[in-house]
Structure formats: structure tokens, C-alpha cells
Amino acid sequence: MAAPSRAHARHPTDDPLWAKVVVIGLVLAFLGLVLILPLAAVFAEALRKGLGPAIAAVSTPDAWAAIKLTLITAGIAVPFNAVFGLCAAWAIAKHDFPGKPLLITLIDLPFSVSPVVAGLIYVLVFGLQGWFGERLIDHDIKIIFAIPGIVLATIFVTFPFIARELIPLMQEQGVSEEEAAVSMGASGLYTFWRVTAPNVRWGLLYGVLLCNARAMGEFGAVSVVSGHIRGLTNTMPLHVEILYNEYDFVSAFAVAALLCLLAIVTLVLKSALEIAQPDVKRGGGH
Image 1 (cartoon, helix red, strand yellow):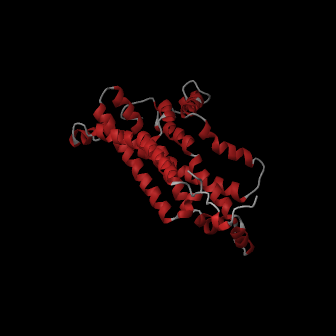
Image 2 (cartoon, helix red, strand yellow):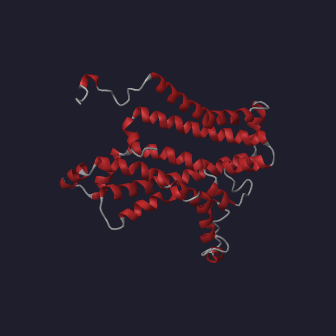
Image 3 (cartoon, one colour):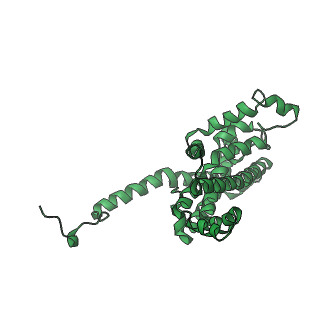
């Protein structure tokens, strides 16, 4: 049987109108049910008694302490992961060395390990009965139930994001520009800062936004290592949990709404970056 002519060949995406309507309708219904409706419910509950009580809820000393700790934790974890992700991506994409597959596997490890388990690991290592617990006590160093433990847990959960954003981007770019720079007498460090880093700056920023959003919203690992000390070791997600368990629903949803606003700001910045630099979206596929 003769093959259909090119003029009458059907384009792979040339589906019937009813099929497009059904698929798009299902997608919109799913997004409305699992994303838009819950977000709307959060803001509706936060403003149920008016704007004044909602503002008062996020202005209490405990709420401010939670907001401050969340920003401090993200402010430490994100730059650390940015440096690690940039170095790891450069090593994996630009060099061959023994143990390279193992490094890639380890970078992906937090994606497969429950955040609660990650928190328990740090308790096992740095807790009072942990491997280094007695030594830490002898030197008056406190990690678990303190800010260092919260930062460590957040770093563990979020460190794949930037690396996984940069590795495919660097691999796609290849090593031709670096080889040209080296052939002209440039040192390895100079080549990295003048050639490699500028080529991935938008991908790096994209990964930083994703990492920051994840760091601010982390609950499981932080919950295990924080001790839930009100006003001291509670981040915003933990503060929301405490308020909800105390049946202070307006305050709980007010703080949750503020956390959602921070996430929405991150999403807007991410979308603006994708529009400004379309090639960034090819970096990691998140």
C-alpha cells in the first residue's frame, strides 16, 4: 500500500478539537482541584476574621522569630548549595574521574530519602546519644535542637536542586570553549570564572530560586532536628503546625498565607526568568 503523500501527512500534534478540549479541560480541572482551590482556601481562612487579625497573627514575637529563622536558614543553605552545585556540575560535566557515577548518585540521594529520615540521621550523628554527642557536649557545641541542625537538615534536603539544574546545561555546552581558553594560556581557575560560569549564570539563578523555595518550605527534616522550641527553633512551617494544633486557625492560616506569598513571589521570578532567558528551561527540566 502506498504511503500517504507529504501534503496529506498528519502532524503529530494535529489532534481533533474535541480531544484538545478534553485534555486541556482535565488539566485545568486537576490544577484547580489540587493547586488553586487549596491556595484559595488558605487565604480565605487567613482573612476569615478580617485583615487586622491576620496581620496581628504574623506580627507576634513568635511569628517574627519563625520568619527570621526561616530567612536565616535559607540565607545560609542556598549560597552553600549554589557553591556546591556549581562545583559539582563543573566537575561532572567538564571532567572524567574515578567515582563520577557515584557522585551523581549521591547528588540524587536526597530525592529518594524521606526528609524525616534525613533528620533522624542527623540526630543519630549529632544528638545527645549520637556518635559525636559526648564530644560536642564536652566542647559546648549544640547542633541538634539548635540553628546549626536546622541549617544542616535544610542543606541536605535542598542540595540537589542547583547541581541538577546545572549539570545538563554544562554537558550540553560541551568543553570546546574551555579548551580554546586553555590553549590560549588561560589557567583552570581563570577559565572557570571567565568562560564556564558566565555561560551558566541564568541556569544558576534558576536553580537558586528553586532551592530557595524548597528551603523556606521544608518541614520534615527540620521538624526532627528543631525540638519545636517556640520562638527559638521554629521555622514558619513548624510555627504553622503549632498554631494549628492549638486550634488557632486564623493565625495558622495567616502564617501559611505569608509562606504561600513567598512561594508565589519565587514562582513569579522563576517565570520571568524563563521568559527572559528561554534556554534556562533546558537546564534541569524542573
